[in-house]
Image (tube, each protein chain N blue to C red):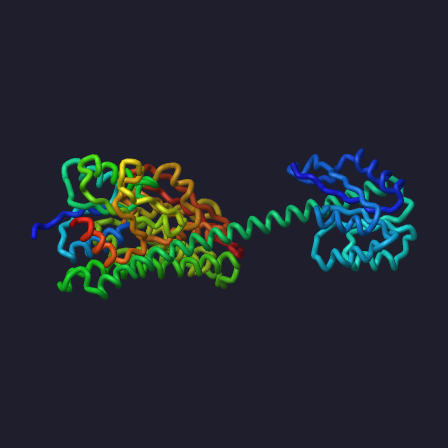
Length: 379
Length: 127
């Protein structure tokens, strides 16, 4: 449970204790989310600016109710000090003569609000509530910022790890080749060179995927919306995976020939189509099949990519769209990929008011259903 | 010279390929395994002259599990464990192959393997 530390600074004992009494009886109700309900107040008192300074240094309060006129160091001067220390205390200035000058000067020095003496308990509660509400909002904002930073940090560390691993592999091969450690027979190095090329290719793919992902996320990807024939896009994808598919005896079939237009960006649709097509071949079994079935439903196009591949467990299916997620198993260990493809696809499909659904049976295959809106895909 | 056989287990395809190539290049025979499970199966009916295990495969301590198995079969067979754990965490493993030591390995080598170092270690341990 969170608590709010309050420091009341006033040289008049009556004011100090009176304020404390009002706040102690006061039930905080600032209409905020439940996680901040029932905040507890921890109230401390100081009778001079000097004492307040000491207490602030020892344990920074969240809210300070500060009398403007104090015997030694003045309220405003204390504010000045705090400002340079960059301590974020919500200060409510208490002034005997409410003048606009004092208000301006206090606000300039970082006071959150001010109260004119004499004030009623209700006025105190009202002003105090405002400060609490502001404080809680700030806490929430800080928490969000921290979470965002954490996510970014995690992304970067995973990324670094993912890039380090192919680098280490290629470096290892080069060292062996450099010192001819595998003997004098040149053919003994063929596999190492092939593997190095595969790892570098994977690394390049990952870098391109990251560029795509960051462009999409930052909204900097230029979209050129026009009528795009999705059948042409799918056919181009089929052509690009055909060499691999043929080599492994995988049969690809598209159930429609006549054009089907969608209001979209050519590049985006290509990325989506290529991803499912490549996955449908990569994670298929030798001599399997990949069927692409198109349906129209109201304003939407639904494309099913049905493979006879290795399938997934329910648990892995749920992880599938995360960043850098690669399903690890005996079947997938020789398949390269950035683990970013589906997370890119998911973001792109969002531009088309669409969705991706997965049905899968381990060992038997998967169906990826992509739903895209035909028109009005302006974001 | 009689050809010695070295069992190499690593679930990283590239490291397995590299270690195997280097070890074979130095004139040893190799048997390879790409998992703890498959190494275990090999050990059921084969007795290598030396074994090199990656520490983390299916389990966090696959290398130690395999090492213990090797020592059960014949405590004279030297075991080298390859790991990235020490360089990433600063953990230090005892390599003292005595009864009191819970880790039964004769050498622990950090990943980012310098293969010359690996070869000289193998040579030492096979003496």
